[in-house]
Amino acid sequence: MAEVLVYVDHVDGAVRKPTLELLTLARRIGEPVALALGSGAAGAVPVLAEHGATRALVDEAPEYADYLVVPKVDALQEAVARVSPTAVLVPSSAEGKEIAARLALRIGSGVITDAVDLEAGDEGPVATQSAFAASFTTKSRVSKGTPVITVKPNSAAVEAAPAAGAVELLEVSFSAQATGTRVTGRTPRESTGRPELTEAAIVVSGGRGVGGAEDFRLIEALADSLGAAVGASRAAVDAGWYPHTNQVGQTGKSVSPQLYIANGISGAIQHRAGMQTSKTIVAVNKDAEAPIFDLVDYGVVGDLFDVVPQLTEEIKARKG
Image (tube, rainbow, N blue to C red; front, side, top):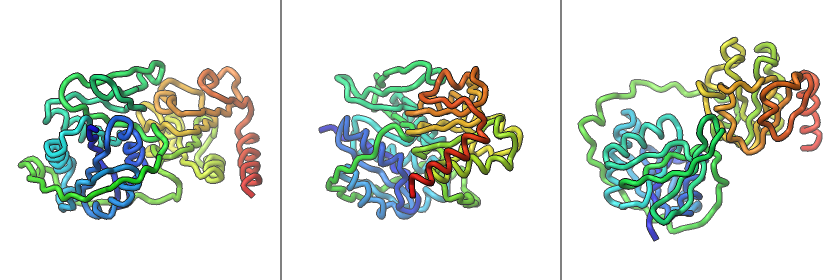
C-alpha cells in the first residue's frame, strides 16, 4: 500500500489533536508515515504508533526551534525524497499552510489548503473543501506531483489503530535560507485552562448582544460547564470586550467544532465564514429575524441574560 507522509504538530513530544486526526485520514488513502521534528520528537512516537503510524522519521536538531519555518520545509523535502509518498498531510494552522506552500513549490507539486475530508481516488487522493464561507462544498485533487494537503482541525474523529511505529532517524542538510530568520524570544501564552480555540470540540461564542466585557463571564461560565473554548465575534473584539486571539470569523480564526453555540451574535457573513463548517450550531438571540437563524440547527429566541445562566445551571445539574 502507498505511504502517506504526515507532518507531526507536537510540543516537547506531546502530540496535538489535529495530528491524530491526520493519521486517521491518512489511513483512508494509504499507510501513515509520521515526521516528528524538534525537541522531544522521539517521545511522540508511541502515541503516533498507537494511532496508525507504521514508522516515524525523527530529527531533534535545534534548528527547528531556533529558526522559523524553513528548517521544517527542508526536513519535509528530505522526507518526501526518502518516502516517495502518495500525499503529504499537514495541519491547517497558519504555520502549517506556509510550510505546505513552500514544500509544494520546492517539489513542483500542487497544494490544497483547508480540506475537511479526504478519500482515495483512482488518480490520487480527493480532498473536500468548503468554499465561499461554506456556501459550497468542492472536491478536488492535485494533478501534478505529490499532493500537499492541509486539513482543518476537527475534520475527523480520532481513531486508535495500533501499528509498528518503527523509529528512523532523519538526517537533514539544511539550506542556506534555513538560518535566515532567527527566533530571538518566546513568551508563553497565558493558560486559561480551556481548550485551544481552533482544536476545541465545543466552542461557546459571544457577540455584540453580550453588551460588555464584564458580561462575558456568562459566556465563560457556559463554556466551562461544557469543557469548551470561548470565542467572540468581531464586534465584541473591536469593542475591546474580548481578546483578538479569540475572534472567530474571516479576519479571526476558523473553527469546525462538533458543537458551536453563538450567543448574541447576529450572523454577519464575516462571522459565518469562520464557523459555518461546525457540525451542530446553536444560536441564542432575542431578534427572531437575525441572520444567524438561517444557519443554525437549533435556535433559541430569547434574551441571552435569561437563557445562558439557565442553560449553564442545567448542564451543571445534569453533570451532577
